[in-house]
Image (cartoon, rainbow, N blue to C red):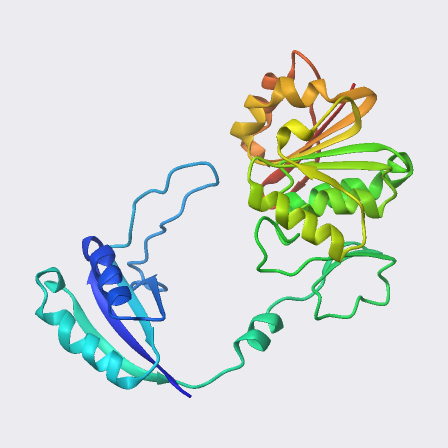
Length: 297
């Protein structure tokens, strides 16, 4: 069965009321794009991580709403122009959307992610590459991190590069998200791995991902972290990492390592200053404007 897409054009201040009206008219989904994208009038909307967006919306937006049948789309196209908030807006088109296998289409966009030549992140619908001696099964699209971001890849590269000292070691993944770093540490032989997060949903996701990868983790809220660890991993963002400096450093055992990510290159000095009372951070890796910082006690 085909779906029907209603396309509208509107100024920045009409996006919210139009989107709400479309939802009230039983649209299956509503998406918003820059109507000037790929033209000389295109205007970036998103800033750097941790920074506010330059503005709240585009000067002109294209709104696309999907409906289950043509009569619903036609009714929306008839009713919306009658509303006061439609001033300055317009109906651009109404088109049938051909049926697709959306699951297969989504899956086709994701392939295994190489961390090292023999360590990969592999979606569940893919066979592991022949070279993969170790792999983490984690499906893109699941919440809280899937290994496609440079910060995650750098942390996993560090884990793979320190496999010898991880053997039977005690490891803490602070702000675990999907648990991917904790799972990676367990795959490389860590003896006891604690994965903690302030978000209960992240804790649940971590536990489910650990089970899917046949590894044992101790999961929970941050108070679950207890005592000293040979490796403390935290892939968050620079601002919370600065706030957490005394707490994270207090968990690093003598001779152990602190591994931090979620940091932009320009933020290196800020982090070094924040951690200086406890540990001397150094840049250990970089990728696409992001850096990995580490320290030894």
